Image 1: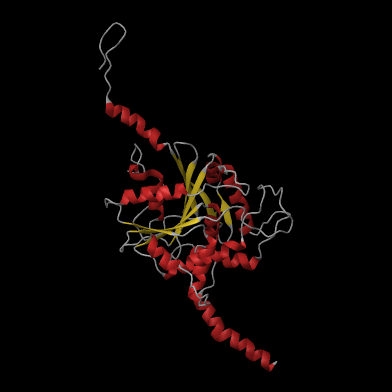
Image 2: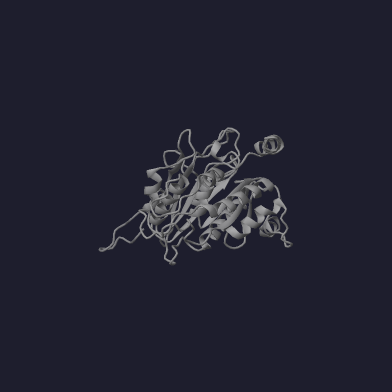
Length: 361
């Protein structure tokens, strides 16, 4: 209360009402999520969603971009919500509706394609979080049944920090899938110049026009004490340069990401250490260099959206005039890695038969 002098009035403030008034403004700092990419029905083509493109185009630089990839039902959407909302993620609005990426406790996949949301930063710029559909699900999309597919390529080329999420631990399958992605990303990248095809060099290979992202390995509900030292041991390429197939993925990872990969082990959400670890992960993502063009200028959300449009065109085999076209066999390999059983049948049955036919005829 203020004194009741001639120039002053008695004022009472109901603090709960003020906090209720401020809470929506706090939540407005997060925009989305909106759909960004979907698989076209019965094809391997990608379809852009205008809602997501408009969301990207609405934000200004500097941008820190983190796309989450990983196996299905391992907490990618939950991790994305934690990065967006922090411990304010009561996860519900004033009407009780859920906020953020859709999550659930069922066996069925929750995310289809890619969704995107934006956390506006107090000093300007934004944290852009992409939530990709999970890989390896027996009932999931055929485009990500054996790896991260075209969505993984998109996530790599848009991110400043690529977030690989697993549950409980990290195993050789995770490293193999990351290595396959790291080897595939060199085959496709958006052409230099604008989305309209201007300022492109005719017949030049499609190459990245920016530094590669950093790699953050995130283990939800970790069962072991993990950290960067474990990451270095897991991903260290062989010093003898051996050609053992197991090490090919490590070499690809070592040459396709900026800096050394980090490894974060998150306990269960209700654990006291959960939110401090999430805050540390967010700070690591924000400490990475923001999205920039080849000339070093900070990229806007509009430039990020244009880059995505060019990427999808290349993956769909629609390279614009003057740009190198991605070979169909490369696109097929990116979309769907060769099934191991099929490869075994071919090598043990078909290839010997072909040799026998060649000898006889």
